[in-house]
Length: 224
Ligand SMILES: Nc1ncnc2c1ncn2[C@@H]1O[C@H](COP(=O)(O)OP(=O)(O)OP(=O)(O)O)[C@@H](O)[C@H]1O
Image 1 (cartoon, protein in one colour):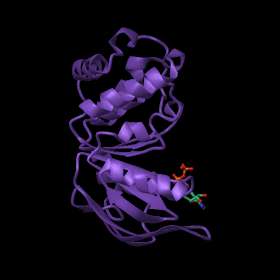
Image 2 (cartoon, protein in one colour):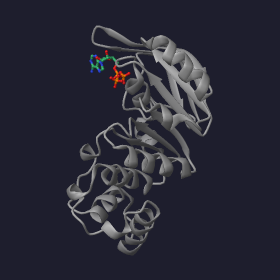
Image 3 (spheres, rainbow, N blue to C red):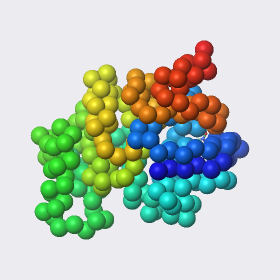
Image 4 (cartoon, protein in one colour):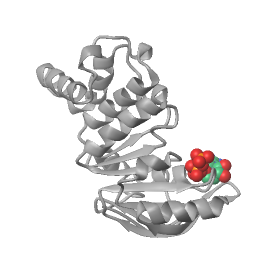
């Protein structure tokens, strides 16, 4: 559950978000809009990576300004470029690295890593060098490294932008199967076809907030 109350974000000279108010409770939420309309900034608000200049963002009952660290433990964030998120030499080590703070027994770490890799089709790659995976597999690895922490909400910033059609379909399929609330910033409109709700941003404001067809229609109108 994410709540934004009259949120403004100023970055340098620019007011990037201008009075966004929304209560996000649906399981699948998309965010679309022109380049520079404020989508990534909005996504970063959801786990306290960005903070409002005025107004408030409440996530899972906590104000992000006061409890960013606590929120980050419960809200996973997947960046566009998986290379930015891959830090260890092998696939299994990279996923295990996410769990380091949990101080779990080695056996449990191994079991959790194996389970998440299995679920996302990477079990056969556990001992492979992470940097040798294909772009789509790297995106899945980054997803595994976030999901192994069992976040209650998952935020994804353009998860299919770097992928070919086959791999973006694969990521879309995995995304569809996730049980938690997922908020996806994207230019990949087909990805949103079965989403519950789509917000359209324009120059820092939400100009449409509707089911996918209607929201995408509005966005196409803006771009015409
Ligand atoms: N640290 C910063 N300082 C100043 N301006 C910034 C900063 N970060 C982002 N901006 C500006 O804020 C605006 C919104 O950026 P944001 O990345 O949120 O847009 P976006 O909708 O995600 O764009 P895109 O589709 O291109 O990824 C842009 O004009 C950008 O230049």
